Image (cartoon, rainbow, N blue to C red):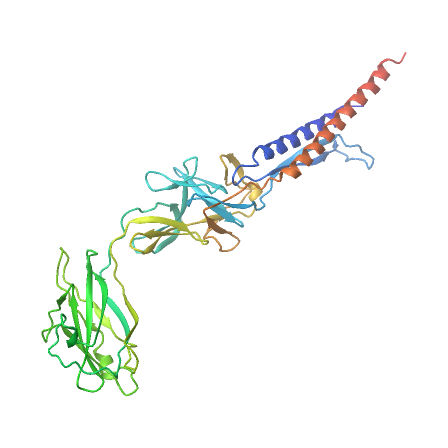
Amino acid sequence: MGFQQGLSGLNAASKSLDAIGNNVANANTVGFKASQAQFADVYASSLTGAGSGQIGIGTKVSQVAQQFSQGNVTASNNPLDIAINGGGFFRMSNNGTITYGRNGQFQMDKSGFIVNASGSRLTGFTANAQGALSTGAPSDININTADLPPQQTAKVGAVLNLDSSKPVPVTTPFNMSDPATYTNATSVSVFDSLGNAHVLQTFYVKTATAGTWDVYAAADGTPLVTVPAGGKIGTLAFGTDGAITAATTATLPFNAPIPASQGAAAFTPQIDYKGTTQFGSAFSVNTLNQDGYASGRLAGFSTGADGTIVGRYTNGKSATLGQVVLAGFTNPNGLQPLGNNVWAETAASGAALVGAPSSGSLGVLQSSAVEDSNVDLTAELVNMITAQRVYQANAQTIKTQDQVLQTLVNLR
């Protein structure tokens, strides 16, 4: 008679309580994955093999397996918090040492890198000045906080309806200061190479020739210097169906040369009137847009479901700043826990499969949210009671064996 079975049972129950206690302690740890102690029976072995009636000598802990099930996603007030909904791990770098984690509580350091509480940097694909992503090897994500440079206006799109029933102005010649010399007018802000805004005004004068309108332009209240003089930049001619004639379409777009000012060079936006009509209805502006903008400062940024980080600027524009990547593993249970909510790759886990979120088996991201621990406190408390009973039962077997042994010793 031996005490091996009872002792191994006590040890196994103690290990189980350790795992349960660790789960309970981390019930509020963001991104934590619960552990489970798994056991195997133990038999004595011999060279000739074991008999069918062999009695085991106890139990042992075969492994402590983490449960990589999804935790609840909870909204947060930090725009840098990111939750993974689905498979995958954040890929972190600390001076070249790569680790992986599910805790998406991030912040920006003084250098513009996105880091976790331990200072490890979040990695992903970087973007160039034009917002194009470099989807090669992942690198540390750095948020460029520089001003967004201005873009000079190159094209203006105008879709209007000119009222065919309007009379020809009787007052001539055209004078932008005299409304009696033109039929209608519009204005749009355009931007020079330094981002300075200029008001580009266009005036439409119905001519004596049926279906034709002269177009004049002025910048910041001054008629454009064109040939012929007076600010005329072109003529729109319409057919009997109210559409612009093919001959006029061939002359589009009209050039509107704006002189140099405020330190910026002269530039010439092109005004395109394709789609403009002449119907017997009131003058209307259906579309009037341009492709330039002033410089802007970074006002904030957000992370999309596919990991793309988009910056919002004070000039109303947005730009791609980078993309967060995720890493998947064939055997997540093979990862080595390092503490601080991160794991390391091992031979048992397999190589990291890095890709953009929502691709393959990788999950999607949710900005301003975190993934809670997947510990089920109710289940853990029940498991704790069970482990306690098992510990008590194994202690009882040792006590019983001790009493039986004492009886043998006392035989006379």
